[in-house]
Image 1 (cartoon, rainbow over the protein chains, first blue to last red):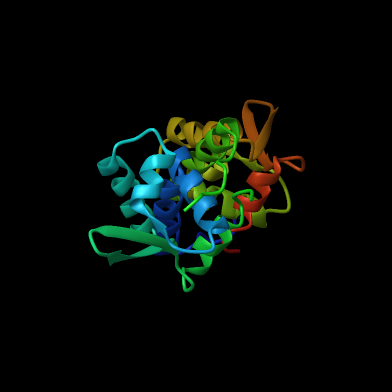
Image 2 (tube, each protein chain N blue to C red; image 1 turned 90 degrees about the vertical axis):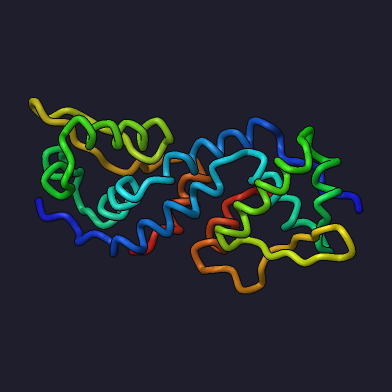
Length: 100
Length: 100
């Protein structure tokens, strides 16, 4: 049976990388919280919410940033994170799969 | 700032496991092809489509089955795979993020 032509390699690779960023329960929780938040969330608030050290929290947020879900800014010594308004379409669709 | 209460651990864990199954370009391609196919697809056809040995192809399909996307049946010596009609809601939503 003839199978549908494959997606371009780059498309499949990008999607796989995005799913890899989502394949972690802490990062899913972070996206859940960012979706519900009315303001950007400080790394310090994430650190308080999870039973993890701040470097681990920052590592998870860096993964989400790399995957295109969030961006960040500094306010004094603290980094704040928020969902990107302009995230890639696939990221937006993936975000919609996380329950509110 | 008060963050939204986290999702139940089991919910976050299940979603993470599902995304782990998707975090592979070959498995994404397989789901793309299964979505387009009008009939179940034989392991032999997947093996021909990808430059991979049949055990690797079967391993990928087993991962997709474990994650709830596909089920399989035997016809003679060959295993055939198809998308589940009754896949979990989160799997259905995740499947929708893969371009046609």
